[in-house]
Image 1 (cartoon, protein in one colour):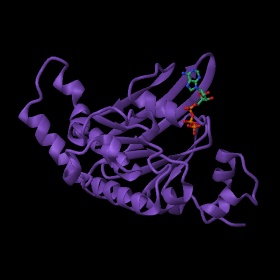
Image 2 (cartoon, protein in one colour):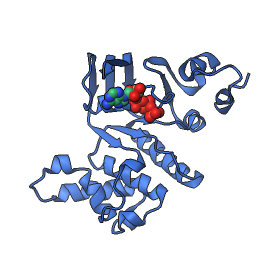
Image 3 (cartoon, rainbow, N blue to C red):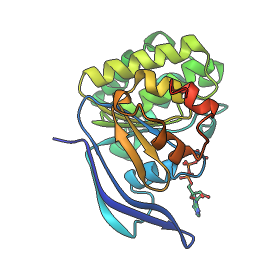
Amino acid sequence: MTALQIADLNVRLAGRQILTDVNLEARPGELIGLLGPNGAGKTTLMRSILGLIPRTKGSIKAASVGYVPQRHEFAWDYPIDVRHTVLNGRAGSIGPFRRSRRADFAATAHALKRVNLQHLADRPIGQLSGGQRQRVLVARALAVEPTLLLLDEPFTGMDFPSIEALVEILRSLAADGMSILMVTHDLAQAVDVCDRLVLLNGRVVADGAPGELRSPEPWMETFDVHPDSPLLRGVGLAQ
Ligand SMILES: Nc1ncnc2c1ncn2[C@@H]1O[C@H](COP(=O)(O)OP(=O)(O)OP(=O)(O)O)[C@@H](O)[C@H]1O
């Protein structure tokens, strides 16, 4: 059983080939880091999984998907508390004209507990720290009770304690069987915490456990860097 199965995915946008023959599978319990340079097509791949982008070829099979956008994409000045922000994550399943039912509030409470934010449920979102905001977005995605969680650059702009708290939450979700696919530019963090890394640059250059990606070549090819690049030292592959 896989939470995500992508076969031969090809995407063209505005007449340009963005993704070519992408194959990717996510199994239950895997925390996968999706890594690549700017413009590699990481966001395009996520948006394709969410069904937001037409493909020219290939197939995507995904179970239920929760999506955690980048923090800056969210309207934090909107006057709403944490509980209702998370509850709104279920808006699609609640429907626009139906009152939230008990199951929706139960899923919201459960999601808040998973990210350790129960004590802040009544707080306006504008009063939260960056780390707390990130956890609200995770809870909001969890409120739909997904089997696959997608995160877009969750560590950007966060301090170490907040990153560690988030990593702990992601690891515990994975331990409970969730598949997690996370785009990040924090390569060292990804090598440290992910079960698998997918190196993408328009196509999948490499896909394997961090321990299997110990040669510099796929990193050099993906990020277009030289053998003496600090990037390689950053992922523990100093020459
Ligand atoms: N709606 C669009 N129309 C046309 N081209 C697009 C569109 N969205 C993205 N692109 C192009 O697709 C390519 C991949 O973009 P994408 O945002 O997927 O990359 P990324 O790997 O997420 O980059 P970054 O790390 O900078 O976020 C880029 O060249 C971008 O300009």
